Image 1 (cartoon, helix red, strand yellow):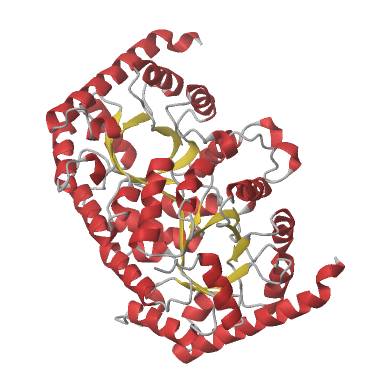
Image 2 (tube, rainbow over the protein chains, first blue to last red):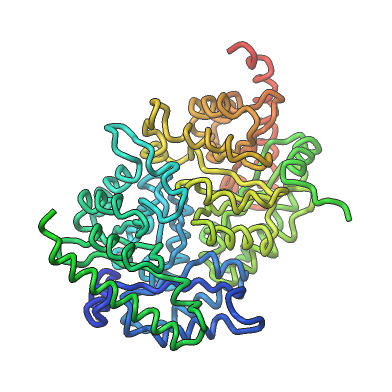
Length: 276
Length: 276
């Protein structure tokens, strides 16, 4: 038997093969398609049209759960149909006390077969640990999120004056004894992303919230790249899934545009990089 | 059409009718039953055996998700089979950015038909709001949880020196414009529960973590009761679901023991109450 490739290995191989730091978020919102359209078939089309342009796919559990057990079956089949060489990160933001967390980890990793998951560490490290015992998977701890209200709690200064999100980042370093802890760091807050990267040079960052503007994307990449010009997974969901005009060709074009913009941002970071 | 009763109304009616502050947690762990036993049938038996002894049922989503789409269908049917006069609080600890949170709220309230849910506010108030627009439902914000590692982040002092969990409690008061915000307050930490009650005199507390010792239970009740000798929902899961010896009669006996211990604690709080 050969060992299963870890999430990190799959991510690095896909990022290299596709020369891409782009992750496409799979958030099936039926209201974004024509009435009666098959949303699951559409997700499969988008995956087929973009699989050579991405380093990861990120289905969001909320959109599947809103369809009940049918949605959970669709999620299982979607994950099963994603090419083996592209890792799957389930955006589920789970977090519960130890015994319940064990069941969440089983659901995500064993039942659904995801390679990675997002988790919430408000309950403490013992709520994260049940995910980390799956050594070949990855758990991305919510650190500084991309939403407008992210700072309401995350920016509050805790002991020593550093904000809560940096306290979480510091804990994530401690929890990372198996090399399978990552962080969720909103692409919308480059300044915060830079502070987190300084504290956590080795962790993978999942960066949601990339908008349409190339400037934002560039700032996020420059702030968050690791010393090897990698270590980030930049997610776009709606702009790829529901492109203006519609159709898989438009999804592919948008994914290509973002992939290329990310490459360009990595290139310019190389010039700017060691100066600051 | 008559308006649907709100979670709070259902809780208060059930607490009065059954003279009970006990919630039974429904966490189907097949490893706790004999091999081949029908775990869903067992949950139904426990509900039948205890419905006149409780103020709430609390299924935990983790245990159902670990069984895939079959588990989600079982959860739907379990909730559907609980007597209408007993409210159902789904322990799901959801929390995501606004658009995703809307889908989680739809899943919990519209698809599964729960009366209330537990939520995680690390992302800020905008992640909680999509649950609160369902005015007849209730969202219990994780405040000070019952697990051993709860204090790792929750106890960190934020600006002004108060711990993060009290900051969350203060925010919950602000978010409570529709009267449908509650808090999760571990029964294992009476001192913290008392501080939260002082800050939040009107919020409902969900209190998990009641162990076998009556002393713990009494301390938790004395700390957390509101001015009307109510406002708490004390949860027990495993001791009722998987009683020593097994069988629905043993589950009923344990629920009765806990219900009566809670009544006694309320009575002694009445004596002790206004003194401190």
